[in-house]
Image (cartoon, rainbow, N blue to C red; front, top):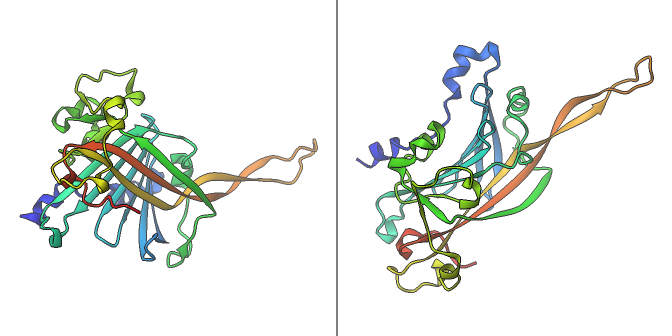
Length: 268
């Protein structure tokens, strides 16, 4: 039963099949990059670029089994972060939990889809380290979304977040120009100020502020340009000659109705 439930929120990558059909057309590309996580373990990041949908998807699995997915949707200017977190049997948790955070996309985070599609795999067994370590992006998620009513956002968000029945969050400031009647506001700022963080909440049934963190250890964040030889007019024409890699972290803060829904957030 447990395996069947997890299969309903399986990874969102879909390009592997499309490569066999459309590979010569350059619609999709997949890179597999080995990286070292903060706990010292080696993981494989899978980066998929889909030029037809204008999306880039990054997936990796942590040592504890948590499966993180980040979708950069350039067509709709949104970033979708999904985490599938396995329960801890030693704490009596036999189920998994799915979190989904949707926010506006910062186009400086990662290179455009069309550039990503043309990247080619080199030295697949090398453990890569990003050239630039960017700071932690801190996002306060102040609205919850009812998954059953989320189809009006768009098909991609609905498909990625469909398993997040009790953990689908957005920021109101990102959706001011859209209809938000299907969204449920969380605590008002004044109420949230006095709310304890979950690690310092002793009563497991008390509401608290939870945090979820994830880190992309390697993504192509910038294009590098070189200058060709000068033409007859003395002008040097720039051309793309590589990429710059970055690491990027995210921290999402949000309200939970009780501490039991935030078992991973510990004091550091």
